Length: 247
Image: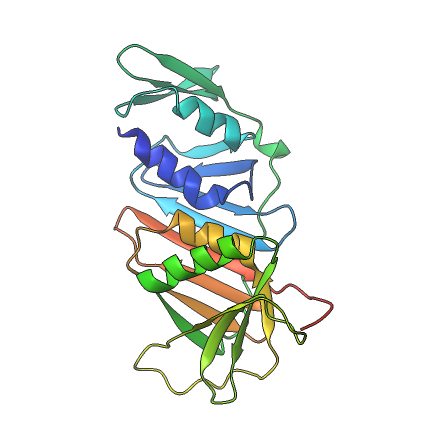
C-alpha cells in the first residue's frame, strides 16, 4: 500500500490538531472516522475504501504520534495488525528495511463523536471552487488573529463570506460567493452567522485537491461542508455557530 493512503485519511480528520483521540471503524471494506474537536466547534466524518482492515473498532489515542511514525517509512509500506489472544493491540507498518509498531488503545477511552440524526433544514448553499479555497487560505493567513468567518447576504441579497466581520471598523477580507445555478435566489436571514475561521482553513487545506465542493448553511447555526473527491474518499464536516460579543 502507499503510505499516502494513511496520511490522507489522517489529514482529513485531524484538521491540524482538532481530534487526537479517535476510533477507526472498519466494516472490512472501508474505514470510517467520526470525531469532534475539543471545543465542539467542528465535527468531521471521513470514509475511505482505500484502506481495508478486518472488521472492528480501532482506538487511535495519539494521532500526532501515528503521523510521526509514518514519517519514518518510505512510500511503499506493508500494513498488518498485531494481535494478542485475537485482540488487535497494534498496527504494524514496514517498508523494505524498517518496521514501526503503533499501539492501539481501548475504544472505551476514546471520546465518542455525537450522532447527527436531527439536522436542521439548510437555507443557503454556496459553491466551493479552487479560487475560493486558495483565497480563503490566503485570507486567513493574512488575518492570523481573526477567530471567525461570517456568512451573510448583503443588501443586494448576494451571499458573502467575510473574515474579520464586525459592526466596528476592522481589517477584513470579503469574498463574494456563488450559488448553484439551478437554485432559487438566496432567502438567507439578514442576521450574520459566525463559524471558526481556523477550522474552515484546515478543512480547505485538507481537501485542497478537490475541484469543487459546497457549503450548506442553516440559520439555526450549522454549516455542512462537502467536497467532490475521488471514489476512494468521502468527507463531511459540520461547523457549529460561534457566538461573538460584537457582530
